[in-house]
Length: 124
Length: 124
Image 1 (tube, rainbow over the protein chains, first blue to last red):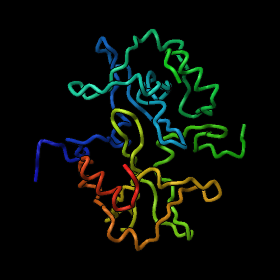
Image 2: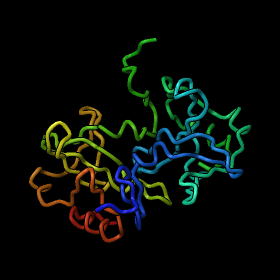
Image 3: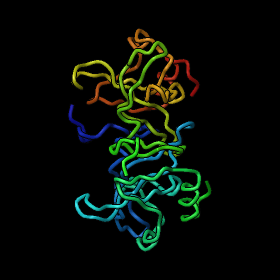
Image 4: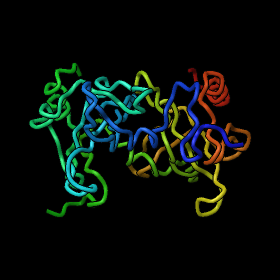
């Protein structure tokens, strides 16, 4: 029964969908190959079920003091080789980006969402 | 600083989006008010980011031996009063529904997805 698929991860071969539990924790790299962090959470439109933001966890030490950076979903491309997402961002671009701590999650109001999308130049 | 919002749950007031971490674990009821189970996972279209299925966890005892039932996302309506999702299903309807165990997650191939949607009469 053992295949090349690790038993701890869901089998997704040939599938068009991916589990939210699997997305959470996936590494995020930039075009240069630097690891920026990992996906902590997804923000989903309540009505349509469309994922609007993948929340990048970055910084801190052993999970303490990390910040969360909402990234518009359309910015992320999955890289099969790296087994992670790639975003067209260098680390410096994150220095002024909208962010929050794990204990102070903002309401994603239309105004907040617009601020995030405007920062990255991604249409709403 | 204490408000009526519990400190352990993200503040979502006035927000159009919801966190995947918050959806996971949310109770699911039917129209009659019976609790069917809770959301274990979300299955997301890799390319579009659209949530296709909410996976209902049901049965078993203390998480052992439970089954997972993928439900087309469009079937779920959020009920603010119950603080849970409501689906138009009686428990008997689940007895023959597509399901799987936590350790044997199927590939969500187009054929599998069609089988799920056909079972509930929801267009793909």
